Image (cartoon, rainbow, N blue to C red; front, side):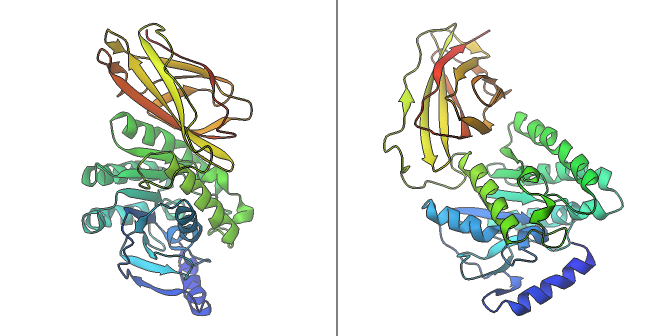
Length: 348
């Protein structure tokens, strides 16, 4: 972050005997999906070396996913099984942008976790930060078009919350425009997960704040199939809860199934199938069970997050050939064992 914050990292490393020195990556490789934590000192872990990567690693291991954190830097405690990352203390969006193509060529990540923009809030042109972020996303997706890019809103700052909120307010539109163009870009709402009470110094999270970040990242990764590879069979239920496609409603049918669950939430998928004639646009309607609330949805546009909801096609998957199929999915809080009712599909 700012110069005063850069000085703090030296002290943090000196007093933590179990922490690896900050420097070039040790090229740890654990096989599996290559994940690049990308950003500034919040990714590095200023105040808590390793930052959110510590708890994120633990969650990934608990889920029995096999991943390989990648990047040119390395730090963190022994409890962080893979220390590699691209978190550059004090760097702005433009500085990351100037180097990202080289990193992507070198480490070829399949999944990228991007939290960047905090240092731009202190700079001479915070209003230009959204445009710089958009350009950075374009460069990442051009170099790595098959990678899954998760773009986070930045966490709160004690100094300039209005500036942060102005920047964050533009990120959903940027991400949506990229996704609608067919790019693998996903929004992660990190700002709402923390408050200034979760900050150690007004800028960087304390251990509890980093743990909250890890939870948000992990849930976002679970929401995009393949971003973490293949984990174990869900603990409950052993067989995914599902409903067969409904009978013809308009020109399409819809079938729901739960694909994963954990203590406080679940992941589900809905398959949309055209009837004997092509479909140009579809809408699925269903009523979620009590206590179920959608927190992230992909491959569709939702109205509502609980109770009776509808999901219409995204810009890129509305046209289906005769008998053709597409899917959308979502992550939700609540009991995944309760199947939504009234699952149906219609076409204009």
